[in-house]
Image (cartoon, rainbow over all chains, first blue to last red; front, side, top):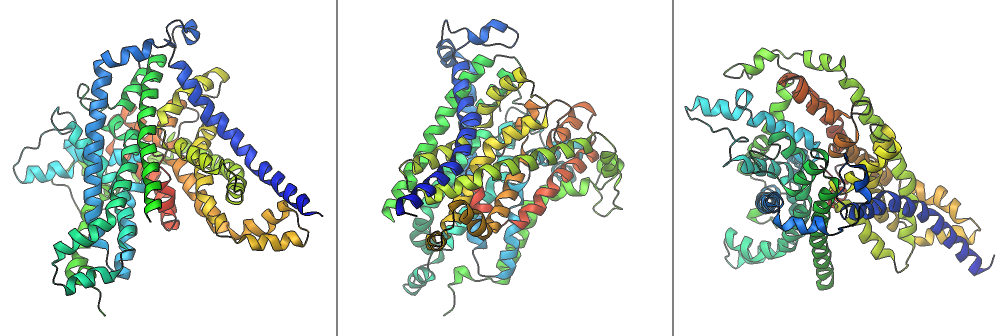
Length: 298
Length: 275
């Protein structure tokens, strides 16, 4: 066989291996995305048959968005949930990683158990926190009662509902930042802190001047990952507060869900979703850009 | 030379780690113990920490519609895993061996599909399924789950193929073997551990899904996570059953996660599709 014959055969195989996946990905990921954008240009409601193909005012939905107080509020709620959640997850994840960064077989074994909240089905996480936040059966309320302290109802209170969601979300995703930071910590050569120790640096100084600069990129990247995924916080809100009280915990994702599957405003909901997608894509691009820059620096 | 003080496993530090672990896992343990309590014990104050465990909630679940939804979860997760592996493993190999220009763009596109919030896919899938009659079917769920499992397979399998030296395949090529034979007889057996880990992760992601199943199923194809929530809405606040249902849904996840803990990180950083 000639050299080009082998190459040709190899190229054909690669095409044969890749094509089915590309076709399927196109059909189940690209087409739905296109369809979503198309639907967002119509006033589509399930109860009005002709509305799915009504393109008479294509940008009407998008024009309505800035004046929709629930949409604006949902972005604001999402921003609060994401920022506080990411901040706590990165902070506590880092502290946990610092605590567990010791060479010991026992600690290595224990590490797996710290990952449990992250791998649990999200709906089970929501059930767990439902039990914690329901006064009749919650250990939290038992403890408060034993201490003669009146605990406010958390998930139905305007002041605490979002905090309750943030606590549950932080609990669920803390293991993720913990894992990432721990992996970064384990690549720091011991010699660095040893040298600093010889020079008389305190533990705090070593952390501030040696460890922190080293793990900073990973803190930012894991925070960005969490920021992107925080948009998906659905089961917690669905089960704990249903977006309430009022619209206190109604994030954009949940608002889009209510619009499409509760009030049948499919077209308008699609427009909300498209805006949300653009925001997520923006953050994702930032993440890729930062990853590239880091590669270039290394 | 000793490790610096900040990296020593002192007894005080070990104690701190164990206490932290206990506090962090306490909400999870609370659910678990509640599933073994009778309804009276659940509402008792102060809560009894030592009690005779009962399996009444588990057996009640097993004889209800919940067992059918458990089977639905099992079927849709398994089939979608199989489909994603069948399509994705050869594609990952092709991407690993192909030095073409579009490679990075394609990898990025695959990552983006994993980052999109599920609602973006749900609206088009719901309308399409409603039109062709795939609502409330296992087939419908399998297709949706493949939309996030296929990118996961391609993303996770590529590094495994990258570690296999090309020289090995070239040797076989010189001996006149066809690429297809090389792939099935030489390359695939070498990445079996990777395939196993990827399969488990795919299964878990599909198993964990709540959002798609909530919207795309009604009664026939209802999955276990949706069934647990349904107790709350339709059968009143039966805490014992809810806790037992939650425990059953998380059981396979805990077992499998332990099995693939080494690969968990790369699988989860590919943009988690939970929710």
